Length: 312
Image (spheres, helix red, strand yellow):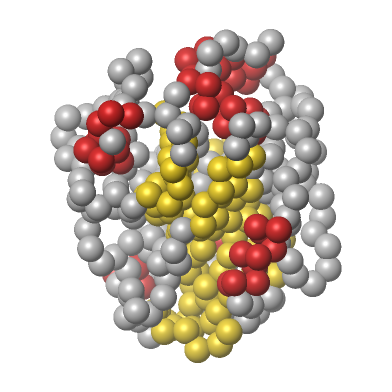
């Protein structure tokens, strides 16, 4: 696959207030170290020098985050007011997100609701990772919910693999990676939560991609669907042989779904509320705990930096 460069920035949505980029799989969003040769910030400055905001540290405001090794849709606000309006959508749980992934093994169920609580791993040497409730060293696990729909079964470099669509209904750190691993189907190329065997020698990247994003701000509905990177024409190691659920049908459902109404209570991290189709109805998302003073202080600080005036 073509490596990231300062010139190959892909834009999938653009307006006066927002950009949605298709982030490359080997490019960091930003970096505070001079050693980082390429970041998404640098790509944006190269393509849109006139849009860089001198009032920010890096020139552009990201409305949410993607892991370094995750590709796909990432929304960029072009001014404080736009950033604030997007943040309110995340805060009020109105954002819809869906990811594509290749996972190890053939997932037998066509649809699974994954509900393992996730906490920080306090085990020595693993303190920067997350784990599910009940595992040794798991601190402060919180309810977490992910919907998984199987799209295809096939082989990756000769090993059984499933292509899936994932929708996080909560927004825990590394949620999709941890949930897939806990299910016994880790994401291909995930060196942190994947299998410890030599299977991870083949992939050139982690096979997780932010596929669909919708942020219904008051001024405009920011909606973007990025190209599917997990096709044989782009990666000859991936060889699908059984179609379980057409991706096009799921995209139609996502696009046609109504945006959820704003919710009260703990804003929490971004967490979409539109359910993917499949047999049976999924259980409701787990209840959110009351907002803590530390969380409220954090949100007010964010708002004071990113919007015109903080909400009270």
